[in-house]
Amino acid sequence: MIRIALKNLWSQRKVYGWLALELIILSILAWVIVDPTVVRIYYANQPLGYDSNRLAEISIDSYPSTSSKYSAEAADSASVSDNFNRILNTISSFPGVESATVVSYEIEGHSSWNGGLYTDTDTVSVTGIMYLQGTPFFATYGIKPVDGHSLKELQELGYPSDGIIISESTAQWLGKKPKEILGMTVGENQTEKRIVGVTNDVRPKSVGPNNTCMFIPATKENLSIEYFTIVFRLKDGIDPAKFVDENRNALNEKLSIGNYHPVELRTYADKSAELQYTQGYTNANRIGIFMAVFYLINMALGVIGTVWLQTRRRAGEAGIMKAFGARPHHITVTLIWEGIILTSVTWILGSAIYLQYALRKGLATARYINHWYIPKTWVTDFWTHFGIVALIILALMLVAVVIGIWIPARRIARVDPAVTLKDE
Image 1 (tube, rainbow, N blue to C red):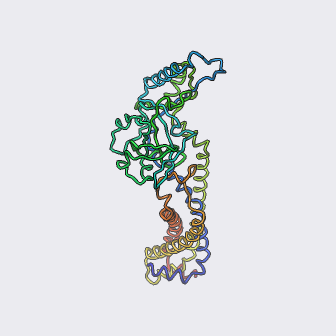
Image 2: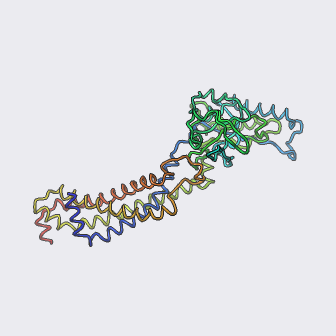
Image 3: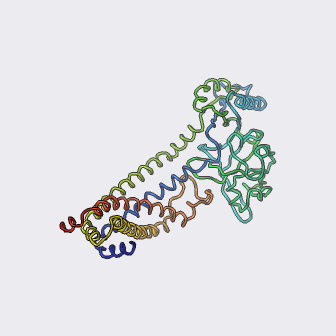
């Protein structure tokens, strides 16, 4: 059948010329639309690396000395430290709360701290997340150790002045496995740091991919406690949105201590939605997916319509084939093979043309983050990326072409050959 299909295509090359040109153009346009959409969907569905389902946070600020609510008595260091502890203990023991931690440059925050870790042979940029030593930071977020430590051991790691905890992708960038890198000394900001733990990979922002991270256990002296954020995990079965709505007033009252006052209480789902909207991620996704769907529908309708008409015009040829003993199934499959071969050839040509552009400008990558921070995936490997997207485009084109051929081919393969020959 394939040999017959090839002969038919060659004998009707003038007829199929315009269809082939249309398919080449469509394959190039498919690259423009499908490539960024596939990358966007891939990164959007990557695991966060932590459990955000029952997370919420509350931001705490201090009244300035110019405020009428400012208390000079509550401004001395002892009072500030005591009030800080009272606020954290209030949240930790609040009904429905499972655990709580204090963070600086928190996950999913608008601002972030970026720095670099370096050795004699390599350098890696990292997103730094600072948390209060002695609080269940990793348990609250649901971040897991991958270096042989238990979660409890990771949580209880001391705070030597040079100790840091890194993510698994950071260790990979530095050329080590998680267990091998423990105790390794790296440079950071003109100082030396000792790696004491390794966690699973985390996406510090849901608008970007997994990022190389560094978690820094800190004391209150290292944190800015004039304003801070408490992230807390609710107990199983408690709806975060309902908890926030029902307890907002009570928490505002309980946490107004000294010069401290609550600023914002929200779930992590609301925080993520706000970040994605303000960073343009939400609109970009909607527009990108809409354009992709719109294009694919129009491509499918255009290809199906064109191929449909082209196939129906071959009713006389089908009648001749049937008159010489060809079965309807044989005729249908032959016509489908013609479409598959034509589509494959035009897909190769269209992809080869787009490849020239991609070699100069690159393929689609993650947005909102410098590529140097991204752990290696199929997206960052040019040829793997090109091959995967090319196969997706081929599959879409084949589906449209096969549908456009199969439906009319079944009809013309079953007509009476005498009728078709008489029409001819």
